[in-house]
Amino acid sequence: MSMQAEEAFEKPFDRAQTLRLLAFLGPYRRLLRRAVLLMITGSALNLAGPYVMMLILDDAIATADHRKLAWLSVLFLAIHLSSFVTERSRIRATSRLGQSVLYDMRQTVYNHIQGLSLRFYDSRPAGKIMVRVTNDIDSLNDLLSNGVVNLLTDVFTLGGIIGIMLTMHTRLALLSFCTVPVLVLLSTKLRRKIHSAWREVRRRIANINANLQETISGVRVVQAFTREDINLAQFAAINADNRDTWMKAVVVNGSFGPLVEVTGALGTAALYWFGARMLIGGEITLGTLVAFTSYMGRFWGPISSLSNFYNSLLAAMASAERVFEFLDTQPEVKDLVGAVDAGTFQGQVEFKNLTFGYYPERPVLHHLTFEARPGETVALVGPTGAGKSSIASLISRFYDPQLGCVTVDGRDLREFTVSSVRKQIGVVLQESFLFSGTIAENIKYGRMDATDAEMVAAAKAVHVDEFVRTFPDGYHTQVKERGGGVSVGQRQLIAFARALLADPRILILDEATASIDTRTEVLVQEALKSLLKGRTSFVIAHRLSTIREADRILVIDRGRIVEEGTHQDLLARRGTYYDLIRAQFGLDMAETMDPS
Image (cartoon, rainbow, N blue to C red; front, side, top):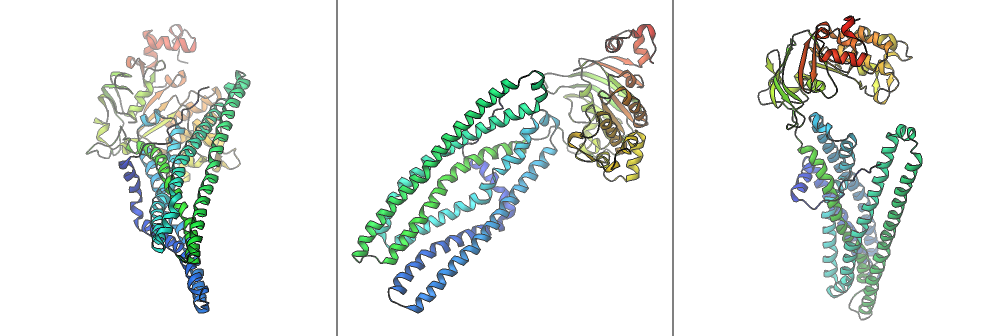
């Protein structure tokens, strides 16, 4: 089994992309200012604590001033209480900011991809699209909610600590900073190794996920070919690789904390050594030494956070690039300038010298010309890959032709808005897709404002009512994922009811009767009479019972119409259609000439 390649976890810093990302903070400037203000206030309160402690030791306890001691103690308590309240408010503000931005971004991406052309979905697996909308946007949370605010706060805190310490005692401050270069080096170099190690772990986990997904999705094939032992060995190797990579990451990660503690201890020891000598010599007070020790303890946090910020930014760049790739993808099929509402179609459809290919250099349809009159049922038959479904996609305007045009009622489809065209075109596919929800909701999917009476009438017309009444919850029966809980034939009839209720002027049945049994086929043929009545219909089918009822049959081969006529006329010609019927049904239709 092949492993699914994992996309890049990091990208180089891109200023333009960063600014584009930060633009999502625009609607929340007020909340951002509040979060920054709360961060700065909290930092200021934290910086004030050691200074007040110095005053307590030097100005109150040393002088036995009980009144000042009481006031300074109250102030010290008030600072910590205020810091607690500020921190709670800050967490609430940054969380709201981050989630609001993620909501907007996810909604923007979802709205955008809803309008993209089918080529976008044809060229990407569904799982990849889901990862972009969920995981990639989630990975931007830390940068958008805390990253920007924390960056400003860390700079403010670091500057405040350095300023206060230099003001209190310049020489002791410079001595205290002697271990800063070592800590900065540890924070940058070692953190980079840690980040790289965990990135490798994520790659191994991605390999496990890919293997699991492939095995679970193809479990029937696995068991049919008795591949269990081979799969077990492959998974064991991948799992062992993940274990070993994880242990390497744990070892590297585990060394960071002790090294930082040792470096901090060296700095603190140097501070105590020189500070104690200065205290004995009368150069500083006890309060100053205690305050210095406290500030040094708070000095490492911002440095560590700032060293990690750049790594987080690079990881966010990779996710942002993938998200913006979707947002920058433009729909190939879109409303042209001056496009108008289509109104109500009469249903005359014409292909005029049309050439189309999913890749322009490889046409699927070649100079196609034909006409379908209002209310006429046209069957499209031909071998696999002949271009039948491409014709259906062009009528629905899922794609636009490279040459020629599709007209409805004499006007090019591109003159109308896409939504107004598709509202009047119904499509029933071979694998009818039912959404999670009730049967009633699925029938009303194309016309949510329909009444229950209209919904039931449509269901009765295509024989859905007959089997729905046997369910305990009737039309309120919950449909499971992808239509689970109802048979293939029942799903098909529900799809017919959905199309009938939507009341399209043009109907496309793309192999809509291919997956049903003979017993259900009788019901389907009855349903089709109700469904096709009064509509211009295009039926792609292999079943003779469906084809022979068509007003006209177009035989498609290699993107061209090679024959055209009724079922009996085409049999009489003994051409391509005749050969298709003989190959499919094993009947000597030339001798019987009997459609029944």
